[in-house]
Image (cartoon, rainbow, N blue to C red; front, top):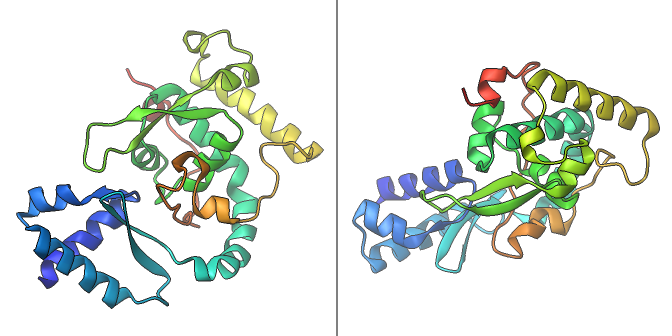
Length: 230
C-alpha cells in the first residue's frame, strides 16, 4: 500500500489540480475501500501542520497549500513575484494566444516552470483569458483561451488578426515598459499580495485550491517554434 500512496501523491503533485477518485480506482485497480484507506493514510502522514495537505471534494482529491501558512508564504514569495510578475504574466498570455485552447500544464511545459497559477489567475482576474472547456485527459484539466478584452488590449479585431510573434512581443514590451513607468492603480501588473481568493482561485468557485508559484528563474527567450504551431 505504501507504493500506492506514493503513486497517488506523485500523480496529484504533477496534476496540480483535483483528480477524480475513479481515475485512481480504474488505473490502479483499487476498490473503494482500498482507495479510501490510502487517502486516510496520506492525510495522516502529512498531518494538519504540514505545509502541503490533501483535501477531498466532489469525489476528487488534491494536494494543496496549507492555509495556516498564507502570511508567511506571502512574505517570502511577494518580493520574488514583484520582479517576475510582468514577464511571467505577459509570457503566459502570449502562449495562450498562440496555442489556445491550452491547459495550465501545457503552458508550464512551454515556459519550463513548475507553476503558472499566479500568472493565470492575474489574467483571469483582468478578463484577458477565460476557461473555454476541459481537456479529455486525466483530471479533466481546464482549457484556457483569450477573451474580447484581450483583443481590445492588443488592438485586434479578431484572433485571426493576431500579429506575428515578433510584433506581439514588441506590443508586449511597450505595455510592460509603460506599466513599469506609470504604475497606474488599475494596472494589470501592479504588486499583488496573496489573499484568501488567490489560495482558492475565483474561476474555480471553491472547486480547486491554488498552488504556490515556483520561484525558479524564467527563461530569457521563448522560441517562436514553442509558441506557434507550424
